[in-house]
Structure formats: C-alpha cells, structure tokens
Image 1 (cartoon, rainbow, N blue to C red):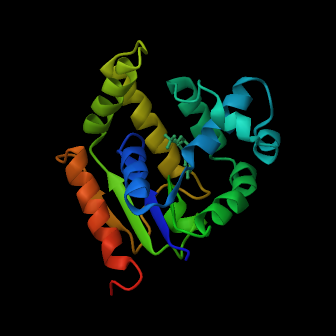
Image 2: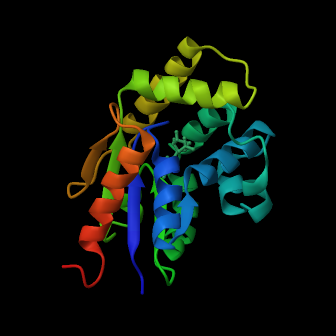
Length: 205
Ligand code: C5P
C-alpha cells in the first residue's frame, strides 16, 4: 500500500510535531524535508557551494546536532530558493513518499510540487506571533539564548523568502485542507489532522 500525507506550512507552525505524531498514530514513515535544506545550508556555512552540497548529501549530514539553530534555518531558506538545489532533492523525496506502508512528508512544497498526487494534503498555519512564541519557548528550553523579538523577526524573514521565491514557493495546494492552529493546543491540532486522514484512508470512503 502507498499512501502519502503532505503537510506544508510556514516556519514553526507545528508541522513537525503534528507530522511525527500522525506518522506514529498510523504507522507511517516520516520525512522532515526541512532537514534536507538545513543540511545543505549547514554545508554552505562550512564553505561549500549549495548545488554541490545538495547533489552529494550524505545520511550523516542529516544527523548533525547543529541543524536546528536560527543561523542554519536562515541558510536553509537561502539555499532553498536555488532551483538546482531543489531539483537535486526531488527524487529522494518522491521515492520516500511512495514507499510501501504509507509516508508523511512535511515541508513547504510537498502538496504542490513533490507530491501533487498525495492522498491527503494539509496546510498547517498559525499567526506569526503565535509561531514565534512557540519557537522561542522551544529554543530557550533547549538552552539557546535568544529573544522573542529576534525569533519573530527570523520567522517573518524566512516566511517572506519562502513565499516569494520563484521556484516552488510556499503556498497551500488548491486541494489542501487549511489547519490554523493559532488557538489550538497540540492534542486538538493532532485530532483535526487525524480526522482528515481517516476520511481518505483506503476502504473508509
Ligand atoms: O521546516 P524547516 O523550518 O526546518 O525548513 C527550513 C527551511 O527549508 C525553510 O525555511 C524553507 O526555506 C526550506 N524548505 C523548503 N521546502 C521544504 C522544506 C523546507 O524550501 N519542503
């Protein structure tokens, strides 16, 4: 059985949390596609050309423990605007999406470009202020030193770059279900996502 769930949306909207939990709930594999761009961005910070890094991405690049910083997030969103970088990462993502047993992919262009045929497409969003606050709490809990204003500025800058780029801009697919989590806690957002997937599962009509 192949069954693809595409979860897109802006930075810190809760896509990662929802995707992981949905994958665990249904027994699907999960790919955080942002990690691919973060790993490429990380290698550019180490001095490599983005296109070369994307073409030669290695499993260990995804295992580095410094991919979650604001610096790497910004580098990721810069390399993500380069068409050759995106092209180099397409086949891996598509193969993952169609693996047997079902897959959840979260990112910015999964429902529009990577898997336009996905059985379920969700676009998870929340106000920039709510997203910045969640990311701020997450970062400070991990010991990162930052301010709410700095996180808000980072989120807004990345959203603008991701939405305005010419290649695969962040936007909901026409047939995506919008999930605004501004006023939802995690269990409520997860229940809403699971309900959408249940409606499309084979044999459920
Ligand atoms: O989701 P995450 O914040 O880890 O993504 C980091 C960056 O990678 C995003 O700001 C975006 O520029 C890029 N990205 C993308 N397409 C995806 C996933 C992430 O362009 N499918």
